[in-house]
Image 1 (cartoon, rainbow, N blue to C red):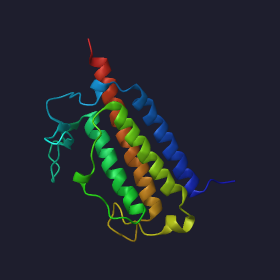
Image 2 (image 1 turned 30 degrees about the horizontal axis):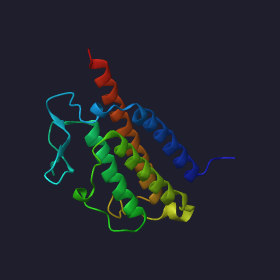
Image 3 (image 1 turned 135 degrees about the vertical axis):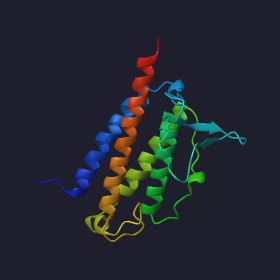
Image 4 (image 1 turned 180 degrees about the vertical axis):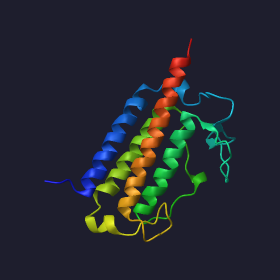
Length: 175
């Protein structure tokens, strides 16, 4: 029996998440803010005891190399906004998405986002998958909720690869 679109999307997500867990379980605290080159985007402590991401409204050229901390904040930001859209809620602004700041709380935060996302995903019917997506294409009728789910999977896969590569590079570069 052929797999449904929903089953394929869920399988792809589960595979990507399992790769992410592999790296999350092996992260060391110093991995989060390790800067492999001088031109990096990272998370910076702010005056209120939180963290602020490096950011530019127009992407610089060349694009800065992100730290694992920045990538994990970025995952939290876009995934929170995607879940807000999927639930029909007002999407939060970038500056409303806080980063936990340490390895264990970051991994727990991302795990909670996964749980939230799967609760949204598991309620979707085929009719829901065919509805116009409100994110990330701004209600373009050419893109459906199924496209949004596929985008989340692809964006997560890309970010997981970035986290893994940075983690591997840091550990390979130690004396």
